[in-house]
Amino acid sequence: MSSNSTISEVYFELANARPCWTLIIFASIYTILAIVGIFWNFSVIYVTIRTKSLNNSANKLLAIYSFFEIVHQSGHFLFAYSVISGQYLMPYKTVIQILAPSHFAVCCTIFLLFFTSIDRLIAVIFPLRQSENVLFYIITLPFIGLWNFLYVYSQSCDSADKTLVTGTMSGLSSNQCTSSPKFLPTIINVILLTTIVLYAVVAIAIYFRKSPSNSNSHQFNIRIFRSLLCIVSMNIGGYLLNYSYIIIISIIGNDLMSIWKWNQIFGILLNISAASNAPILYFTSTEYRKAFDKEWQTIIKLFNRNSVQPH
Image (cartoon, rainbow, N blue to C red; front, side):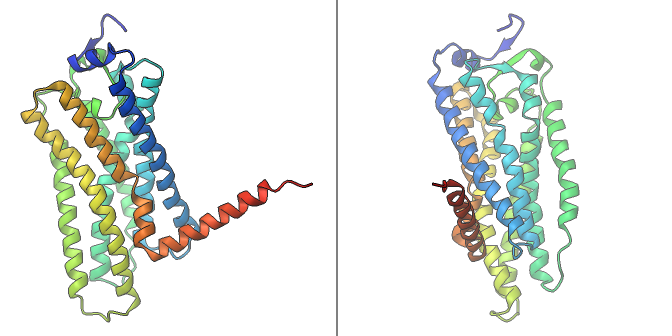
């Protein structure tokens, strides 16, 4: 550890515990959630590509959302590496550079939830119009994600070059200047609350829409809305809790170690929601359940065929 490096009271306490069970436990939980989440989110992408019936704009947006969650959760392996290697702490600038894709993806997922609510509202109001907005969202999201990373990078204190932190995403926000306004968390909370309002409007529009209850478009809107409602409730709930906590704790927080631990707990809740897309789709959507079952059977048959050895 360089003598020129600076270290907060919390990280000093964590770094001097050998072994530090607090870091080991949190890193283990994050790693397990990341592995499970990456697997499940990849499965959503896989069945969407393989299943022709899942070519609606909502299905495509869910697949893109799952991709960004894969990028987001892959960032947790840095935390696992720092703990397994016994290094525990890493230079702030190194961490922010390595986790740049994850921060990029987090912002993209939040705005993608917002775009999905708009897409569903358009689909309900104009049921005969084929949505062509997916390309617009794909083009727009990278600029939003890049803006998020540049904002986080610009808000770091001048002393951040020599600051040592754990390899967690929450460790970056804690090293922003204390005088910096909580602009980004506030904007994100506004986006999340707006998304909730839009889904409420979609629910009302579906309920009062004067279309035959047995029409294909009406039934599809109900089914996809039910699945999206569960996913959005889990994911928006996770992000809303996390970013609300960032705002609140900056006002009332005193015990630095407790703040750090609560940051990790809320981060774990967020990652549970990020890993839940595939299970939610499986249990709430007949189309996705059939697609998952079909692909699982294909994969199992392939493995069984390869495992048969000639006598």
